[in-house]
Length: 304
Image 1 (spheres, rainbow, N blue to C red):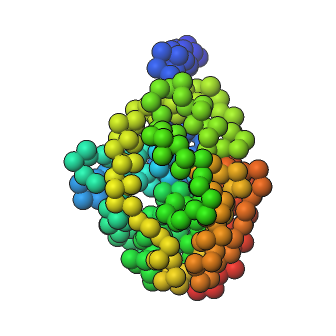
Image 2 (image 1 turned 90 degrees about the vertical axis):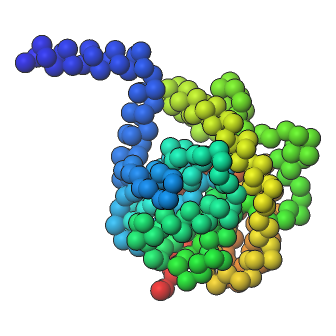
Image 3 (image 1 turned 45 degrees about the vertical axis):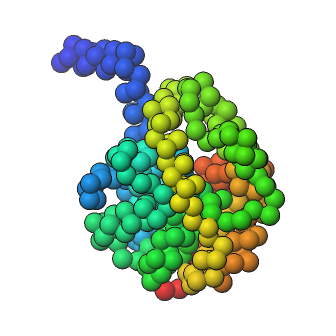
């Protein structure tokens, strides 16, 4: 019996050594499991949408940003699965969800897919949060389906006029997109750009994340151009939102200047703004505990 156990351990070690991608997947599975999340998929029209799900209670949907994926929310989501039903999709074109080069992945197109996704999961009313592009999509969805969003949380959301041009805005004017990784060796530079204090990842996780970013280089470049080409400017739309809204921003955000938080607060009827010091573009990942505390207090105070 012990001989078979030893042989099984040796085989497992050989698989992990010669196929490091398996070690990366094992690491991600472990992180998801510790957060109380399981990976699932559902067919939505032509697309297969892969998503994380866990917990019971009121529904809480989390939308990732451009070039990101569902796992950006794991460290944040672990604070909610004990009392909320958490849903975190890979938006079509990103992560493990399907991508078709002949389709559009602008904000409005993603909103239509989300409508079908929520229908497939039988989600009627829910709390909705989004980071960056995901925040822009969350606002556009709330405008289109106003009665379904119990609360809206925006982490450094895209789509609003900057009072002070961000570093990314200035780079884009020069034809440089800091959010698209073309070589694995560039991934650490991306982390430095979007975080004020980049999180430390184990080497195998870092290698896997970099490889995944490079795998999506062509699709990310194309999707980014579609987003710009069919840009949804949120400023005139925000006063129409009736859902209570929470705006969270990192004061060291280089992607969208922190002045955007003020604009969101002024334009949304029922809003609260929280700015984190020494934090970059992704507070839910850079400061997950603090972000979760603020969001829990906010949505927990809502009566519906």
